[in-house]
Image 1: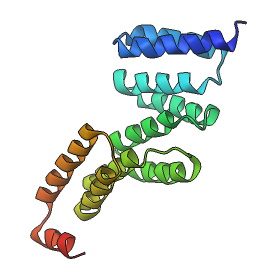
Image 2: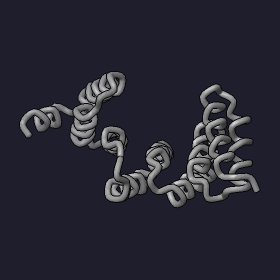
Image 3: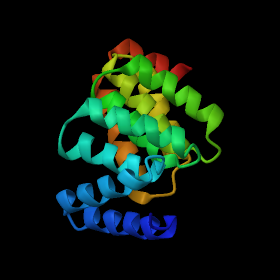
Length: 173
């Protein structure tokens, strides 16, 4: 059995392969890592990402994200990636519970991204006032100029979806 540091280096290689667009190569390397170290949380996260984003295999993605959070509970990417998946597949109540759990358990949660996802859920559910406010909260604490611009565009889109009464409520609350 090779040392863990070898597999950490293999993980870095897999991460690079994903960045280069070689998803198949990355998947192969990640599966090799997990064959030797089944509790390597970051490898589970990346496999979850591949199953979700490239293979549309949501059940396998969920499986790997849950293992990633179990085996590496301080790795924030797994929590956020799992959130994106739950929202994208319309499991809003699970996503809200997961986000609430993440806020309690994860020290370095990206509140901007989570507020953006909560806003997206509220928008899908037709609660445009809440959605607008959450996008605004996400924007307020953000540092990335592109993220800030995206939140502004999201707020504008949601504002245009509001009824006249919702717009008035927004202004006077």
